[in-house]
Image 1: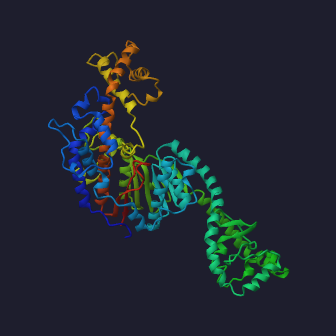
Image 2 (image 1 turned 120 degrees about the horizontal axis):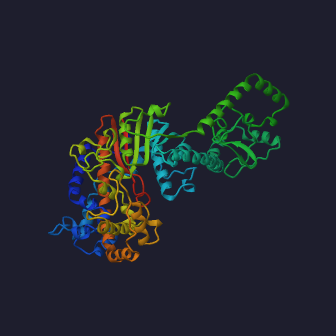
Length: 598
């Protein structure tokens, strides 16, 4: 087994226990909903220090606090936060990087024999944004390494979306990829994008591959040229047909005569150099140097005498014609197959999905998922465990707020289809009947590194608008005397109207209309008055959201450790790990759950 030392199941369980004990105390902060921030006076309930203290502490002390903060009390006597430094320290101690269960990516590279600095022909930055380019390049190399290790040529990309990862795996690494997505729009778009990408790929490869082959074959030719016996005689033969022959000081042949080739393809290695067709595959092989073949066998037919040409034509007519025809057909079939290495498929996947019903020629495969949403990440692991044809899994999840929770105490807790809950999935955590809550899972999606290191900001203004709107709704449409009726069977949401609103007044008008409320009796000045009243308290909302941001890695860590624990509980899984694949500043959901079967 070339992989790094496996993390034991009992260690994973102990870290899960540590996290649940911690979150039993602190999860109440993450479960606060922004909508209720002012109506429930959340700041006064949870925090006893000024908001400026929290903002400064989170944004300017993210690099670490003194060791004196370890063991310091976070809460005052009334159970409100009064020590921000101690709060930050304890949340760091309970985040994945400090729990000692993650496998370093460098160790995985070394074990698999991968090269994270490998030069590639297809530059993702030319047709993807920076975030997606980073994700695709890193994950595809990991997938390719595992595919080589397991002798796998087929990859199943679950939740493939626009097909960026699938296309790259098929073109850069020659893997046969099936991209499965539930959205027809995504599948159609992926097909069209892949068609354009193939055209770009062919042009780009023709331009770049000869340059790479030239530098690689140059040194090889310099070493092998000395194996040719009687080089002087060959030089004279070359000169006798009028072909220029130059030798550099290092002995590298600068020009070669034309080589007859029956057919070519993108990967055939045929390219032009000094206006002369040359086959890198033949020139760089033992068929040219150090073999029983003579130099004359590589010359064009024009270099042979007339009798030789007649004999060769006769020979071709009798024996070679059929062979070359067959070879041409095989090459054409290969090109057609290679052009369709990526196959987008529209299909909704659940834990009970039969892959044979989707992929007729399924064989030993690797299942991957790059930012699979909600329950799909959990179901990816279930499918991997249940299907014998799946040998490796590499799953990066996202959208934790869309997870279904088995033990969540809510009206929607019984809506999960067929009991395949998204969280928890491990028997260990399920035995405790533990649950997060939707707001806490929403908090787990917050980009901790981006916010704390100044590379991103929370949408504070839009959240502020929504919190103040709730005050208006409570005071003017609540108290048991609503002037509107909303059917209880259909829940209405404000939605994303902030960017479409010119002001808070405009926002309130649009929101109340969307909620089925009549705000015509409210004047613009009345609505603006609410904005002016709460604007001085906007920093409270910003500061509290930063407290939730600090908790995000802890909640995410529990969700991911639950998935790792699930794999380690399976008898048919030989090795599993939790690996940070991506730079969290570029891609906040940066952890992959990886498993390999026995």
